[in-house]
Structures are given as structure tokens and as C-alpha cells.
Image 1 (tube, rainbow, N blue to C red):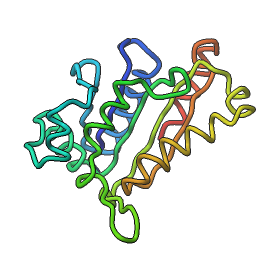
Image 2 (tube, rainbow, N blue to C red):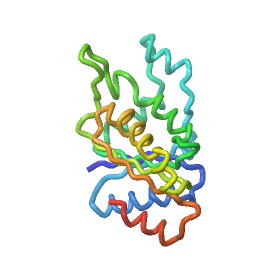
Image 3 (tube, rainbow, N blue to C red):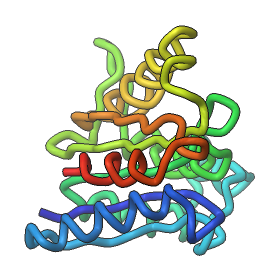
Image 4 (cartoon, rainbow, N blue to C red):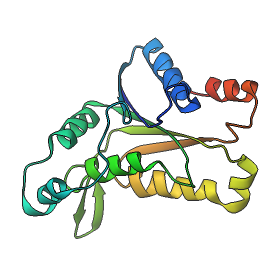
Length: 186
């Protein structure tokens, strides 16, 4: 299996990076090929700009960075997406990655019968870390909102069979709790 890990966190000593390290370690132990996209380290430009619009709407040439990331996604059998939740959302750099890379004609199409995902026969595991306690997200419905947006609205829309795991109370929780979270990673 080919596992592409896409993650975003500006701190290489973050819990988000610990998740990435654990996923990579377990994937390699299973004999998987692993490639990692660190959006901050790669200084990914999240801004949907004129070259993107020219490609999407005017038949222009696909920007090289978009093409490179699409090739990596095409290579992969499985995507692992790891990010912290900031203000009840993914970081802007990841949203920009999705906007610029998961494009109409590559990740999905519209037909007379509605939208069709083009990234079929791929799976995705999303890991979200947040400092908010789980009880708050459950009481407010934010957990369900995250699943609706990230799973249904983005990755399943594009054809990927997706699972999402939310690790809550990361900052205020204990080391044992965080270690326990890492042990649940398959």
C-alpha cells in the first residue's frame, strides 16, 4: 500500500507532528510505502490565484505545484490527513491546499446525475487534534459538523472512503492521555 500523509502544523514538536510520526512508523512497520507532505515546511501557497483560475476556467496550464501534489495523490492508495483544529476549522493552509489541488476534473466531476467523485478506490484517514474538551464539542455538535464537512463535504465527495478521528483536550490533557491517543492509531 502507498500511504500519502498530508499534514499541517507550524511547530515540528507539536502533537500533530507526533500523530504523523506514529502513522509513519506504523505504516512502515506494515511494509507500506510512505510519502509526507508537510505544508508548512514546503511553504505551500494556499492562495487560489490567477494561474489557478486560468487553468480551471480558461483552459490554461495547470500550475506546477498543483500538478506535483495531484501526482502524489494519484500515486497513493491511502491518504492520511493530519491537522489541528483552529477556530472550529482546519488551518487556512490546508483549506487552500484542498481548494488548489482537489479540483473539478481531477478529484470530482459534475454530470447530469449530479457530482461524481474521481478518487475512487482510495481511502482516507483524517486525524484532527483540538485543545477543546470532547464534552464541549459533543454538546455543541461540533464533532458532527467536522465529520459532515471534512468527510462528506470534501473527501467522500471526491470518492474517497473516509474515517475521521478527533483527539480532544490535547493541550490541557495529560501525557498519558496523549500517549493513549497515539496508541489508538492503526
